[in-house]
Image (cartoon, rainbow, N blue to C red):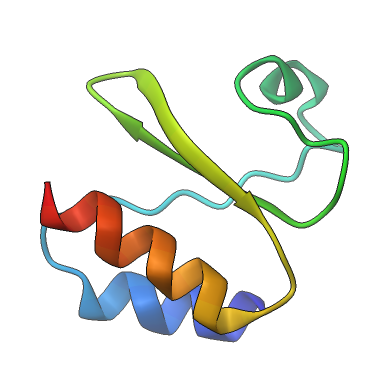
Length: 70
């Protein structure tokens, strides 16, 4: 999923993508529910907006499209 995540980040101009390894940065787990990996979370102005837990690229793309449209 990482290559698709990077590709999507290059194609989305009005969003910043950050890849965080919750194993290396356990404090990041407080920012979103990471009970099921992989978890993708969206934030706006530092506030949690929405998340999706999936291995399917289409679900990740839907999240990005929805958040980037706002």
